[in-house]
Image (cartoon, each protein chain N blue to C red):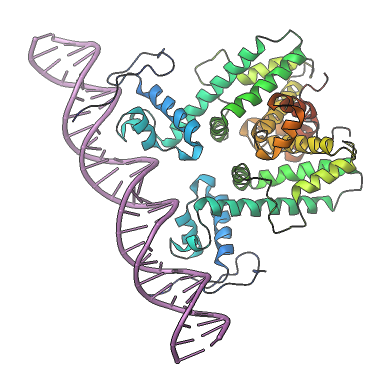
Length: 217
Length: 217
DNA sequence: GTTCAATCTTTACAATGCTTAGATAGGGTG
DNA sequence: CACCCTATCTAAGCATTGTAAAGATTGAAC
């Protein structure tokens, strides 16, 4: 039959890992296809067959790269946490050295990421819940979002750096607060308040402030 | 054919509303069956056919009470918000009059509800996101969780009661904070911290405190 | 008792997750 | 170069799902 699928189609990023045999890093292509579908049609609309279709391969092809639909989603989630960390680091580049200001900016960029990719953000947490730890792959990645927050918390003096448990507590609290704002700030019910405050970012800052996120300004 | 399904089986609560024709409030029975399955097998394991099976009716029967699978889940979510409000009110009964203490207790009971019914809590928000407002049915229910929080916030003096926008902001901030803690406190990663603090409730109190939830103690 | 509308069942269809068996094609070994 | 081996992909199929008719049942109103 006519093998009518387009050639490798270098996806979004050039495959850093060694590229496999026939298709050319189908694994990456499947993850990208999944993200495309999720962002376009919502998280519920995802199906393994649909992903395969989007990638131009047969319905059973994904099973050579992922044990499960679950495992595909997990890969999408890991990728999401990666992008989140990158997004946070990028936001920090434009911010002064004051640790509290940096922490505040981390919070804003965190929420903005969730607002820009709501379906993927949801999947990130759907799979984080089933995992043993926050996703720190063996892929010893430089950019670990959780570590970034913890270090900033310590630097901001929100907890005694000598007391690891205290740092941990404040870090977790910050994460919880940001998560709560991130998931809810997109609710249509908050539109009036958002307009009253003058836009998305002011609303986020105001909520984070109330929520104890590096409150002192 | 042998009609081998058990008779009405009064569900959990005796049907307060007028009971319909054949089965005896199948609508309620379906919602209860859905909750049973969700709590037993997880939120992903739910299927309309499975719910029908659990309720002892044919696979197509639910379509006479719900347009959609989505609409069944929405009903489960509304029921969940109802139970949440009741749970919060019940928790308030044992608490002194100090508004700040009451607000703190609201937060704890909120998080405990989410911890006790994680799958249903998830569904509550999955459907709340698609709704126009927080679920205040025409069923003018006395117990509205959102109003309860807002009134307590105003009473606690966390915002100028004369300034509705300020009260709204603080209420929303509290809700976001509690939501963040509620969704994350069950993460297995937090087990060490929970043990260090001496249990679930102390961990919740500590996190809520850091997260600006009626902070002054 | 007849009629009516709400309720439930039967049957059916397309789509999905996943399994099994077979085709294809790189890459190493002789 | 021929050979085989293994990873990758396809084809075909099964059980289950969501949902849509169309037909049966039954309580109630006249």
